[in-house]
Length: 486
Picture 1 (spheres, rainbow, N blue to C red):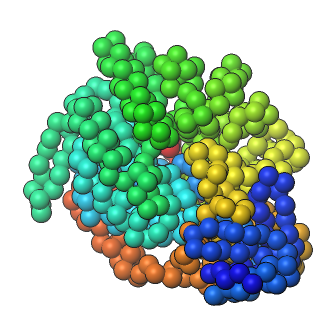
Picture 2: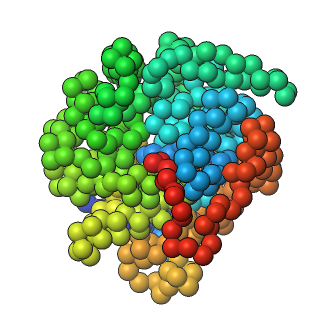
């Protein structure tokens, strides 16, 4: 017999391998950080002697979920001012450029990573800022704080850093106690910081870095001065060239209104480009995405998906890779990818008025193997196969909303939620067991999150943004509301 470290035995194994094999009485064998075998529980039991055997009878064993689009920072300001006419964007702008300290970024990153871990999200993208242009890249200290915090939790993360949209310079600030010190930040400053974070963190442990610039839409060509628009195009090309030289993902947030065609003209598309939202694409743009191999991050729970529609079905049918993102936690959604899978199915079925659209197996692919492809990591994660990283999630099906134990794949996609996750293993390391973090101090993380959120509210005088707005009760819609676009 061969000695191994972990053996998951007896559960329904959803492999997401090339044949999409589902093994009813299955097992997964793990040695160090890799899966070395997947198959029948009886066969693997006779083949391996495990340091620890995990009985998964009556449970589902599946690959870790992957979230291809979310925002760092949002975890401490979620819902704040979100339904008060444009206040959410103003808070994001203010908090992330002048209001947030390194301690804020560390506390938020730990909270967000803990939330992902609790919900079985073993890998996720986090933009170091919010909106489609506010990046905290005036100084590397903020990116370092974020990456150190996530590394301490142990989840995989792709941290996207880059520049803001012209005009430059933009005012940023750091805090020394109660004193605020302002600084005018240029594109070159942000490029230098982004390159520094890339050199410091990409490939370090479970951390990766992606690069970004803001989306350029038709409105920007009309509203920016000719010199600022020309600068934006030049900056995009500069950052894109660095992403290609470094071999990292290039991503953008908020594609809409002709932006995909513009991105093609600028020369930024390709299999290493990940475009988020991608709403209201023309037929020509859908074909551009498919022809260039560009990846799409679809966020069906986002407000952008209310203001427009991502043609995910048409993109998939054209041959494009479409992966699922949470856009969490901005401003009204969590990192629970089960919620977003369910939202995704209803979103497209409602549009087509056809319940046969987007079968549950396909939406599960969008949150596992297709998401891994979108990040260029499908050789490492996204499925349970020999040779891949041992990122394994166990779902407790012994719950009223998941019982009886029949059709477990259907039940997992249609009915499960993040709180049904029983165990999470990343690189063969048990990080969540019986629904509780195995090494993270959840009490301390929550206390720090509360402390830093309160400090931000006091520092930036945001108390009026955390109460109930007019129209919260009693009416069918808010009066004179201007929704966030995130």
